[in-house]
Image 1: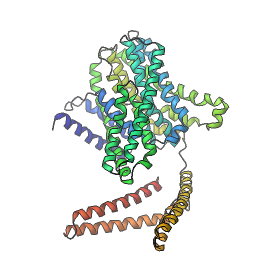
Image 2 (image 1 turned 120 degrees about the vertical axis):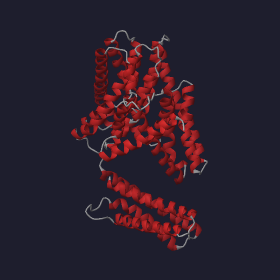
Image 3 (image 1 turned 90 degrees about the horizontal axis):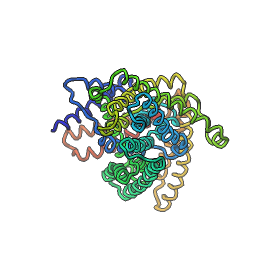
Image 4 (image 1 turned 30 degrees about the vertical axis):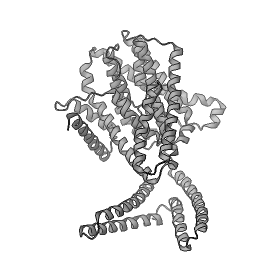
Length: 525
């Protein structure tokens, strides 16, 4: 095993251990991983881990974006398209402009175009940090949708803006028309390529019932969207997001249950490991960035504080007018309910930056004006927003008394749809049973099974002080499964049952137990 591979395995082991510790002590894993990475960077026996921009932007980012995109609700994304667009495009360009002007004013030796490059680097909230923290602290579904939608698209705006700023800095000056044209090509090209690859992936999924093939297609899909888009000058980020949302929205009709279960498990593990890896990697850059810094510390601290202030305050300055000013128009006011100031403040505070910003900073040419300073300031912005804002976001939401989604409303909606689904299932059962002449007792058993499942949702709306029959059924059936499993293990150990048979039965038991356990966890939430 090579040293590089061994280092990677050790990092993943640290991710697992630190994430497990974070859950046990009630901390947010991304914040703890960054802090552990910073400490590790100063330990003498820990090798230097250099963040490779190509690995992050071309290897890790497509996987994380695709994993998030296939889980994104397309109807919810459409309903919140205006606020998402104001954040993913308007906010990024606004922060780019303000940060660039501030840095150029403080350090005149850095050209304005180079200062705008820093603004583009630190402008997009991270695609992982905001939504992972927002979901874990239970923010309202609409707020999470807006943050998730922003983080899926804003990287494209920032990276294309960075490309324009770098070109202007190194002498390839672009007119405003050319810059806007490049942005348009990146966006439209990314949408078209993402749609084509999404359609192709859906076509492949629809024509196979092999779970392994489905997962192989799923792993390759984000790269099949990202690489051609980048090669043709479009936005690979937009292509991956569009492709993922296209496939995710149609997934229930594209593949069988075995493929969906296996794919969900794969992407959960992938997200867990890659998210933890990138947060740990951010912290591990601390020592190397400090060692390469060649500017005087007083000036460095002033610039760092100014940029952090602009990034944090600038988000409030953009978000509040962006939310309330359009509601002066009667059409917008009639179509969208007015959000509470508490929810708007939480969206403003949830502006954590992450590894994409750091990878973008490292991608600057080594001869780029003020490169060491720009990389350092980027790291400080990430550290302050991720640790400071991420750590205080749960407290901030509680202090503002941000209202959560009403579980009773969710249960009522589920119960009504389950009842409609039960009636549809009854009609289909009658039709199919009449065609094949099914025995009456089979029809009655299937009808009772569907009715019991429909009634479970109504039970959750009933008396909370009494154990619902469905919960008693789950509790007793789980105990029965445990006894059945032990009997099969004993039979295997006595040599009267082959392991192949026991493995097949174990799969059936595991699927049933997983379904019962997931229902119980959902009811406890």
